Image (cartoon, rainbow, N blue to C red; front, side, top):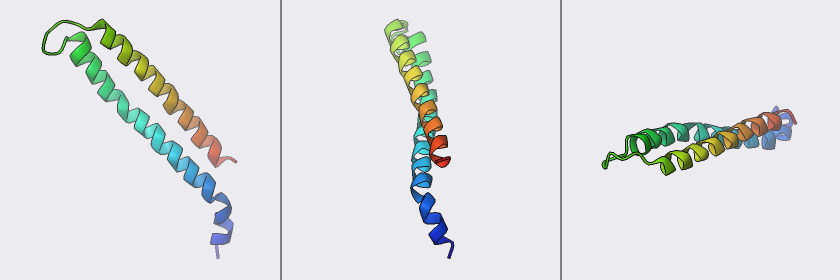
Length: 82
């Protein structure tokens, strides 16, 4: 009986779940990138020589992932209010 009322919101709910999963995935990538920056970039990995290029590229990658996660959060929120 309630299904006829819920069918109208099925696509919005599914879209919100996809955007939420993407946002959470972006959030879960951050610690791995930070670990790589510290272990391989700053401490120099096994060679002991700091790698500035790695720090910059991982830092830029982190910024892009944060922007993507934020966009997914906003889009997921807007999908539920349509």
